[in-house]
Length: 306
Image 1 (cartoon, rainbow, N blue to C red):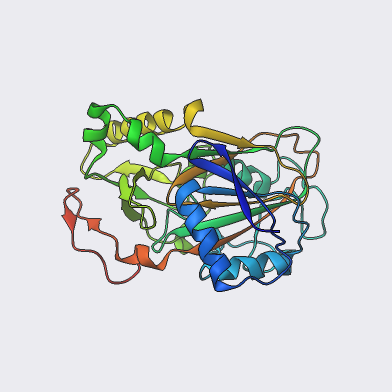
Image 2: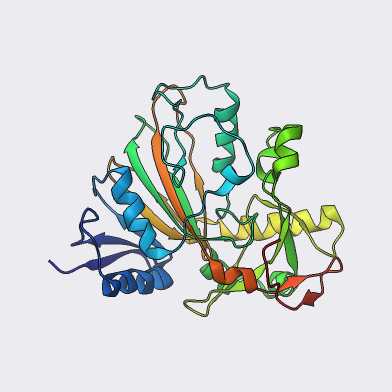
């Protein structure tokens, strides 16, 4: 059976059929998926029923692994491989954690609109999230098309965003919720990085907004004015016409392009199991994207990670 792509939104999100993730794939199939990601930004693979090793093997086709906040935050022994991000409310033995536990409170940050690993250079390219166990209600994941949002921006807002840079920091998103990092976590944190508010997507050539909860200020603007600009852009980009909400079923895997879409988790009863496992790959090319000085003026592209 040939692989097919069914659009779930016009030019955004497609459901995949005719593909079994348990089997190895050849370079031509990898390229087929990369072309589809360039077009749709989000790919839904329903009912794949794969294990951790198979998810990791599939992920490896698209780039080097990214372990995200594990570089900056010391965690307890994990029940999952180091290359896999545990987005569940379970402890290392598979039991539901108290909803007031620090780790669960940290996970609340995933309910804010964001792009994975925008707080580092290189940033993340693709993420793949798999549902093992889903709660009786809630727990959906929403995706926002930052390309279509940029295309539709009012002229005044587009002009204000062009050629500006935002600073992203690993602990900012959770700090806005009152979850303050410990002194040890601050000492171990990656340095803040700066990205253009408007980036050009390497695969499609389309301009896209690059914002989200990790962005803490706009370079060259007073802090309040910059944060209002970030909020205005996010509110515009997350209007219903730009958003797809995925209602998970066990076995589903969703792949998305962090360069083209933001995402967030949706609320659920923390007393019920939600076992979600994410793998992510780095975007090595992003190391060489343009940077800016403290005045917001663009400089030559950096040659090494910050």
